[in-house]
Length: 75
Image 1 (cartoon, rainbow, N blue to C red):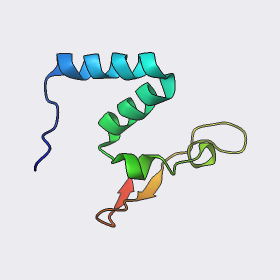
Image 2 (image 1 turned 180 degrees about the vertical axis):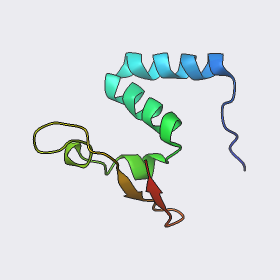
Image 3 (image 1 turned 135 degrees about the horizontal axis):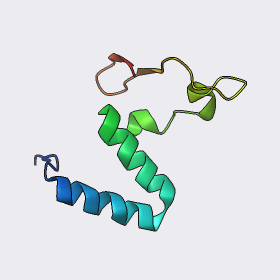
């Protein structure tokens, strides 16, 4: 069984609005995954401290070690 990505922009928007309607965090996770290309298993462990500094400024970069292929990603 193979899973094909959704390539139609209209279907992607529909999926986003559906998930956003269920819960805003689902919409956020969906958009974050689309924009970074990361799997959900790599997104879920990210914490607020990974993104913000102690005085709530964005960090310069985010380093993630992907679980499935053990590759380091710098986003």
